Length: 121
Image: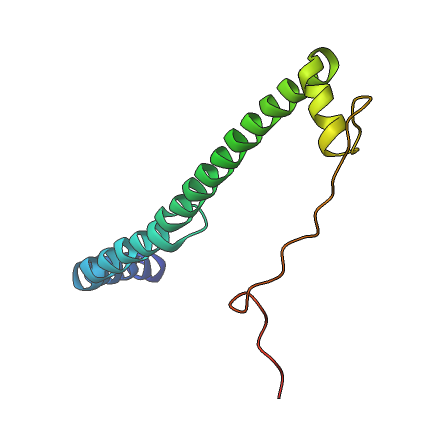
């Protein structure tokens, strides 16, 4: 047997011995690394949960904004077509009155002692 062939068979025997000796340990470490990566990695379980919570939060915000948009659309339509709404806005915000009506403005109510900020020493 030439030395080169003896070296190849020696390496093969060495590799086989190492696999038998440390194979299970290496396989266990590899599985553990994969498990940690699946839980804590960038696309792991925890990251996916965070993304799902974020998606749920954004969806609820979108639903709220859609409801607000619909209410504003109704208000816009009322302001264009409903005379009662137009009169109410004119009276409340512009302090307009019909001929012969008198507008009486009352002073704002005085703050109660409970609502007053604490005095500084």
